[in-house]
Image: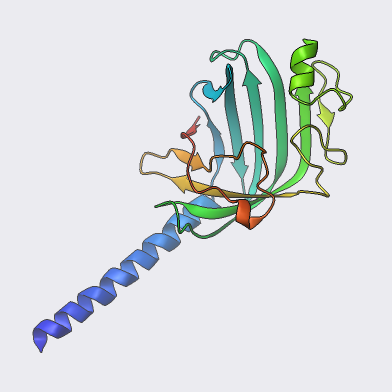
Length: 195
């Protein structure tokens, strides 16, 4: 009888500890602060490399994403920037240690960094009325794979912070559409690290 009681007590303690750990992990993600970046350009395929810079402050977030032709990011193609708020939801059922997260995009901006016509056309920028090196607010109009805020203000993503303080997000689909919960990724990207 004592043995059964001990096993039950340990099981309850184990469940309670897991719930507390889960709550602590969620709280840490909800209170992210500072800037996290890719340590170097990440291979995005087809001869392009991307670099992300996320900033978190009191429930607000921003992202600046740069795509370039080289891993040193010396030949950029464009910058995309977005700002908003975020909420950490429940634990992911698909990715261990990750949480489902909802990122609200209040504003979206793009800056063209090249004047090569074939590249501009290939990325779908021809109809966006962009001027090289001039940031344009595309919140109302959308541009290329980025929808307007009215059409898509939600980004259903994943978040994971490991024991080393590295931050992970979900792998974006080729069409960049994570506007609804059913489009949430089921795998993680490489980590960004805190500056």
